[in-house]
Amino acid sequence: DAKTTQPTSMDCAEGRAANLPCNHSTISGNEYVYWYRQIHSQGPQYIIHGLKNNETNEMASLIITEDRKSSTLILPHATLRDTAVYYCIVRGNTGTASKLTFGTGTRLQVTL
Amino acid sequence: DTEVTQTPKHLVMGMTNKKSLKCEQHMGHRAMYWYKQKAKKPPELMFVYSYEKLSINESVPSRFSPECPNSSLLNLHLHALQPEDSALYLCASSPKLLRDSGEKLFFGSGTQLSVL
Image (cartoon, rainbow over all chains, first blue to last red; front, side, top):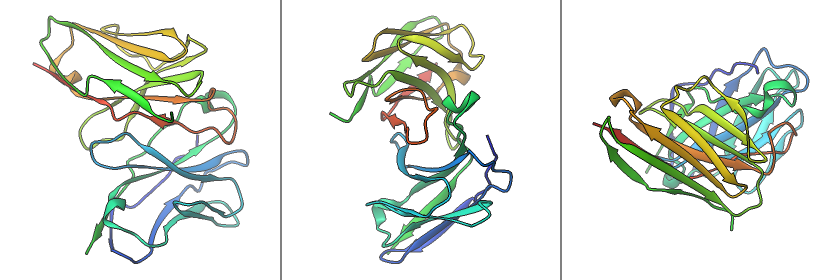
C-alpha cells in the first residue's frame, strides 16, 4: 500500500472548517484513500473514503486532486468533539489489502 | 446493533498470569481483527480472522494466542506477558475481508492492558 504523509498536528477554531491534508504521491490506480479518526480513549472511527471523485457524507468531505497524489479531509464546522487524531490511509483491493495500516496521523485540536 | 464490544475495559496482570480479552459483534460480520496500540502511537495489526479461520498473523509472539470460536466472538488469550506488552488492545470487525472498495472497519473501544 502507498505511504502517506500528514502534518503532525493542527489547530482549528470551533465553528470554522478544518482542512486536513494528506500526501500520497506513490498511490497506484486501484488504491483508495480512507480517513479514520481516533478520539482519546476510543477505538478508531471510519470517516470517509474515495478513489478519484470528491466524496461527501454527514461527517466530512474528501477532496482528491486530479493526479490523486494528495487529498484533503474537510470538517465543515469543527466542534470541540472533533478533537482527535486523524489518519489518512491508502489501501488497495488486492493482495494484502485486507490489512488496514495506520500511519502516524494528524492530531487536530479544536479550540474555543 | 452496530457496536463492537470489548471486555474487560481495563486489565492488570502479572507476568505469570493467564488472562483473556474478549470481543463480540452482532452485525453479522465475518472478518475480525486484533490491533495493538502503544501510547501515542498508531494501531498496529496483530491478527485477522476470516470466517472463523486465521487469515493473517503479523509475526506476533506466541504468548498472544487468538481464538475465534464463532462468527460473533473473538478472544485473545494472554500468557507470560512482558511489561512492554502493556498497551491498548483493539478489536475490529468488517462484513468481510477488506478486499472490496467499500469495506470499512468497525472498532471497539479497546482493553487497556497493564503488565506488572
